[in-house]
Structures are given as C-alpha cells and as structure tokens.
Image 1 (cartoon, rainbow, N blue to C red):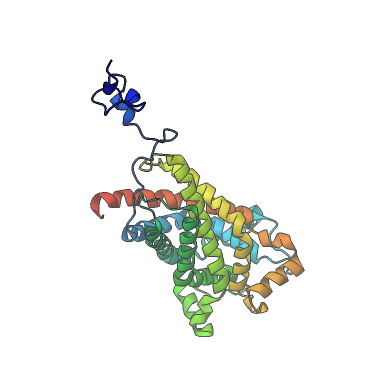
Image 2 (image 1 turned 90 degrees about the vertical axis):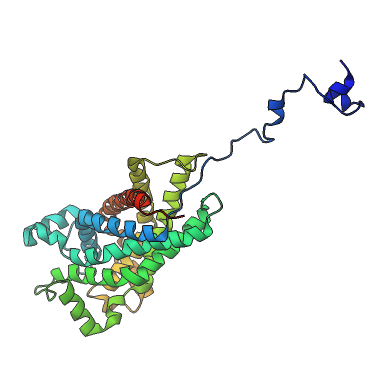
Length: 334
C-alpha cells in the first residue's frame, strides 16, 4: 500500500493523504466526549398569564378540599398553655368542634380563604414564572440557587398582595369562634369590623412573619419540586411527568416546607390572633413563646399542618400542571 494513501503513515513522514481504507469515517464523526450524552429537548416555558389562570384555579379547588386541617392547625396554635390548653391534640380538637358547632364548625373561616386562595395561588405561580423566565438558561433550565430565589420572591409577593390580609381575617374568624359571644357574622362583616376598629393596617398584622413564612415556604417548595423534576427527567428535558409522580413530588416539597418553617408559622398565627396586642413585635412574640411555653410550642399544630400541606401542595401542583397543559392547546404562546 502506498504510504500516501494512509494518514497514519503520512503522519510519520509521508505526503498528504488521498484515501485510506483503514479509517472508518463514522468513527471520525463521533464527539470527543464519549462519557455522557447531551441532554435532549428543552424544558417548556410557561407564560406568566397561563400561570396566573392555572394557579388561581388550582388554589380555589385545593382549599375547599383541605380546609378542615387548616382549621385544626390554627386552633392548636392559638391554644396557649397559659389558658390552660383546651385541646389535647388534633383528634380532640375535631371532636370538640363537631360536638359544639357541628361539622360546619370545621369550615369556620373558609370563606376568607376561598376569596383569598384564588388570587394567592395566581400571584404565586404568576410571580414564579415571571422571575424564573428571566433566569433560565437557553435550554429552559433553572439552577437550584435561582429556583430558591424565584420561590422566595414569589412567596414574598403573595404575602404582601394577598396572604397577610387574608390570613389575618381567617385567624380572627377562627379565634372569634372560641369567644362566648362571637361578634363576626360573616366574611364581609368581619372585614368591615376589623377595618372600622383598626383601619386598613388591622388587616396587615404580622406582615413581616408572613413574608418570612410565605417566602421560605415557596423557596423550599419550588426548590425541592424543581430538583425532583430535574432528577426524574434526567437527560430528557422534554419528558412529560405523570400526574401521580407530580403529586408525590409535591407532597415531598410540602413536607420539607413544614419542617423548615413551622416556628415562623406559629409566630405569624399568634401575631394575627385576637390577643396579638400582648406582643410588641414578632420577635417579642417568639421570645415570650420560648420563655413561657418552651421550644416545643414552636411546633404546635405540626401534625395537622403536615397532613394539610402535603395534600395541599400535591393537589396544587397537579391541578396547575394539568390546567397549563389544557391552556397550551387553546392559547399558543412563544
């Protein structure tokens, strides 16, 4: 064989190659890095407008299903040792409420959450998609740090625009039921009385701990949720996720947020109750809880909150994802 016909020999001193039967052209076309395949597809970007609609629907449906656990959680957090405690635990709280007020008693304060849950979830998902769309890379991926930051900003947004006034009214409604002569006859009457007695600022009690709670809530939830989705998709970024898998991931994200910020939730609830005047600030409330009730008081209501939040987050993410899929059919966006 002429050494001019083979690049191997040419590299040893021959002239320029013409052809070489020893070289397989298919092999020369392979990528240099053979250790891992490049990710296929890309993450589908959700338009903030779709996120607002899907989030609102998800929030409204979810709260109607899970409210009784929210009621029990709030009652246990308001049940201070100094009184002494009225309830021995979640089950006793349910039994006492049903005995004294019927099953409808477990839904006291629902109206305030129904009116608030739709805009709350709408703001949350809309804000998250708005911020995350500015931070995603060219394949639509969001780093863990940016996912945490976007969740934090989404939570802070819902806290300021929706959650604080909604939660204040809800907590006062529930707490009012324990009084000998309840004074709130309904949602609008309660809002009117609160504003008349305390002004608009009366609906913003506990704003700072609410921002801390919602910000940390959504930061943890979106971080865990997106991390699990990235893990599940692996190298196929366009892979669809089964609703049951989404529900499992959502429940996991919800549980992580409960263990991460229940102490903040307890302080927030106390600051929004009818006896909030006892505390000078959120910090003063935390100090007094630790001093007079002990560290365990910061985790009052954890069990009912855990059951509610896991179901809540699972339902919200599943409904949200499915509504977005339907919107993608009728609303084409880039």
